[in-house]
Length: 110
Length: 115
Image 1 (cartoon, rainbow over the protein chains, first blue to last red):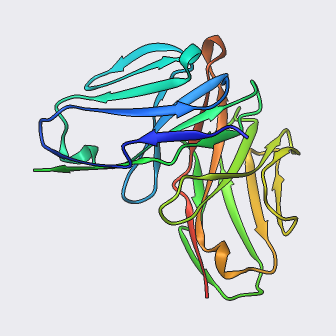
Image 2 (cartoon, rainbow over the protein chains, first blue to last red):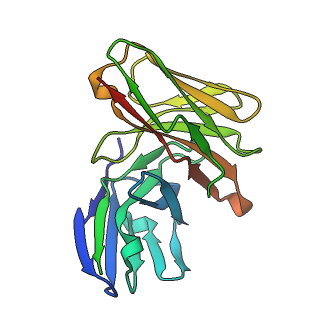
């Protein structure tokens, strides 16, 4: 099956710093989403981005489908950005069966 | 706020028991998926329902079963609970968005502990 790997596995930042999270996937995908899981377990949608670039405030994401990777950029990080970031891919269109990556655990220090 | 709710929030059961977890999504979300997330890992796909029929299944045994109802609610049933079933159980519903963007929205989860 498709493999989804994220890096780095853990990241510690000072408030105000920028970071880049990476998601590599081993096969073609039709859909890709980035999620933030808060300390209470809630998965929050950040981006639906099967290809191209999107921005939402301090966050932006780029997916290069032909090279099978996606990047999530966090600028001017805040303590509330702490949590686990997952990318999830859907291999076949319309199945809505998402394969999740291994996650990046981010801690932002005040 | 995703519009997807789950109950109960927490649950403690003992080995061998049966459990039912519930999920309610917004009107129009005709696809619901269930995931199991063990501690420190990413969510793993259990199964999906579309218009009240199972529409895909992950690598989980038959003692994991589900139902989807016409009112956009659904259930996950687990029989003969094992210690390894302790996890956060997440449901996600699909909103057929604009321009073919199919985004999954997740509920807050039910944390199941099996003793």
